[in-house]
Image (cartoon, helix red, strand yellow):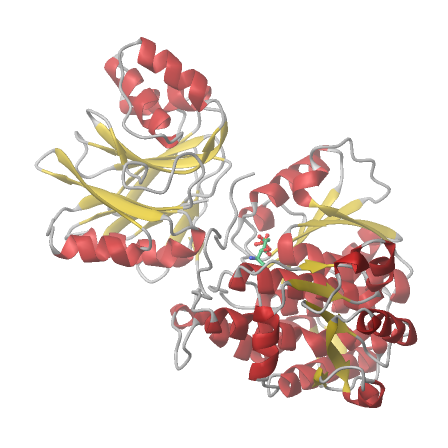
Length: 600
Ligand code: M6R
């Protein structure tokens, strides 16, 4: 799950390559590199760490060229060092690759036996040398790529720069996204549409097992028989302003505070608050396909959104829900009881979720997706797409996208149940109000220190708030790198309570509107009796019950218990953010992670 970017232009492309990489850095930032052509020679520059390191290196290594390819890496095969950084270069070509070549060891062995050498530990270099091998067998460039693709197993996209082609880039896709943008100034190939949105208006998506030749203002797409394949033009309307931090210190902070606007943007597409009417026009189809059960598949935060949706579907609409983790879903003979499968994905490019979608489709499931990026692979493979309209989310940790997923899932449940517009409107207004109110809550410094200094950190809750406990814990782990886990409150006594001593903190979510309220309070007492500290996330109404702990954060009261999750989300985003900042971590680009996880 790396970012690949390439440009052919009438002018020098080096700065464009660097800014393209910066836009793609969310896909990985272990190392970066670029290759350009100068007098038919390939020149490469690589650096470990973030793209800024490559940029620094380029200052003392001034190069100029009108064609080049670039890469930002999330390491899979091979350590994080310059040798393993892309581009990988052979006698005639340089390539950048996003994805994984599963059979690289066998191919490497074969190529070594034929006298080829390797300089890195990566699977990607094998793709470069294999294409070179076919070029050496006198295949044309397209044929060499085609032959290689027929052998390379896995999921990947590759951009190829050829010494003989100073005005043409080649690209191939098998499982990982490739978008092409052209105009009279440029020919561009990239992993995502956002990275080229400020340079071109017209974009074209490559499909699996297609090869593209891209030049200024022109491109051609071929299938693996090398027949020409036509492609529809898509005019994007991406707002580039979203890509700036504005007055905020980090993208994540901006995205946290953008949430009221993101919620409004989403609901406006589905309901008209003034007339109290649903304006989403696929309601009947959705109802027909969901009927009385649905399967939901997702990863990470999107999976926790699915867990919460299960409560809503089952309690409010009496619709049975099966929720699955995408990466596990494909490894078993899944027996569907539903007609439709709902895939939830912010990026719409998560490889595990795409594979789950394909598996569900192959078993005749009707595919519904809830995505943020409507141009994504998941959206394009779906029968119905439900956009969450969160706007581009750049921080690796999901915030506004998670919240908008919840809002839309809740709306879908109400719509499916034919709940009257007035009630939907009231619920939406209540959600918007608790979100705005909770944005004003500051996390006290003693609580940040307590979390940092506690050896054992356990998030807990019950029922409808348990998915929020999972999400809260994931947020803390991915940003702070501190070990923590989530345990359902009722499960503590079945083993995990043995972890509790004076160095433990249990972060418990209770809400007086929920039926399990009394039970979770009892669970807090059980922790307290064993010396564990409790950070209670409670609503204003339940304050009086909490003499057992000096550590509490009070969230706004809610009238409808189904909305309790909305009252607590922001607090957890802020806790994770503040803990990570005080540890000096990069909250937008936490270590070892990438925003879009395009490998299995
Ligand atoms: O783009 P997706 O929603 O499919 O991504 C799924 C997960 O990779 C994602 O939610 C991840 O867990 C985030 N880093 C959470 O903050």
